[in-house]
Length: 124
Image 1 (spheres, rainbow, N blue to C red):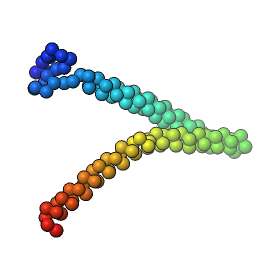
Image 2 (image 1 turned 180 degrees about the vertical axis):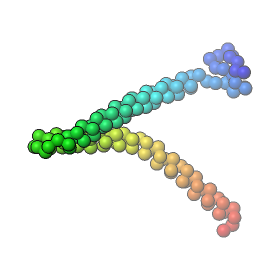
Image 3 (image 1 turned 30 degrees about the horizontal axis):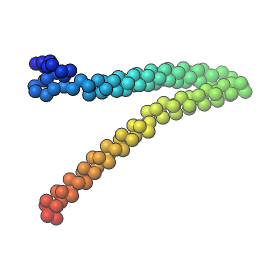
Image 4 (image 1 turned 90 degrees about the horizontal axis):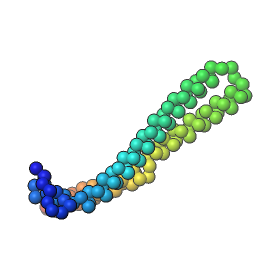
C-alpha cells in the first residue's frame, strides 16, 4: 500500500515517486493526446467529405455530358486527389519515419554487436 512521506513524494515498496518528474511527463502525454484527438477529428471529417464527393461524382456521371458538367467533375476529381494526398501525408509524417529509423538503427546495431560477440565466443 502506498504511503505518503513528509515530502512531495509517495513511497511505494520503498521506491519514492518523484512528482516533479511525473508532472511534465503527464503534461506531455496530454499534449500528445490532444494532437491525436485533433488528427482523429480531421481524418473523420475528411473521410465524410470524401464520401460526399464520391457520391456527388457518381451522381454527376449519370447526367448527360456537357462542358459545365465536365468542369464540375474535374474540380471534384482534383478535390478528391488533394484530400487523399493530405490524408496520406499526415499518416506518413516525417516525425513517424524518424522514430522508425532510429529504432531500426538501435536494434540493428544491437543485433550486429551480439552476432560479433557470439562469433568471438564460439571461436570462429
